[in-house]
Length: 110
Image 1: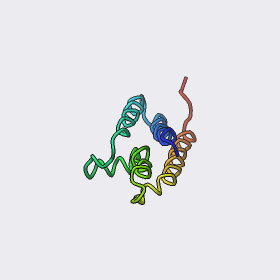
Image 2 (image 1 turned 90 degrees about the vertical axis):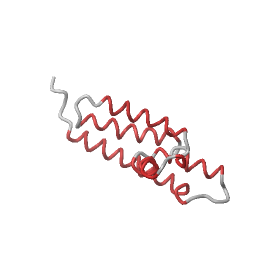
Image 3 (image 1 turned 90 degrees about the horizontal axis):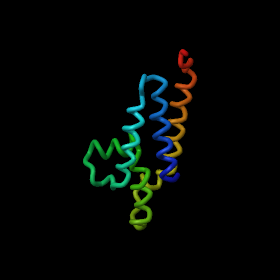
Image 4 (image 1 turned 60 degrees about the horizontal axis):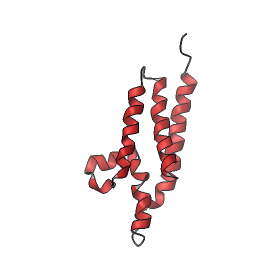
C-alpha cells in the first residue's frame, strides 16, 4: 500500500468518531498532525512511542518499514515484509469501525 492508503485508513478511523463524539473535529486535527511523524524514522522514538507509532497509530508502516527495504536490502526486518498485509488489515479495520458507526447513526435531529 502507498503512504496515501495508510493515511486514508487513519483518517477513516478518526472520522468515524463523529458517530459517537459530539464536535469531533479535534480528533481529525490531532490525527492529521500525526502525519508529520511519518517524516521521521521510528528508530528515533523510545519504547512506548515506537509501539504506538507501529501498532496503534501505524504511521511507521507509512514510510519507515517500507523504506528499510530500499535502504537495507540485505537485512529486511519482518515488519517490512508484513507492511502490505498490515496496511490492508488496518484499512479493513477502519472500514468496519466506520460501518459500525454508520449502522447506529440516526440523523442530525433537524
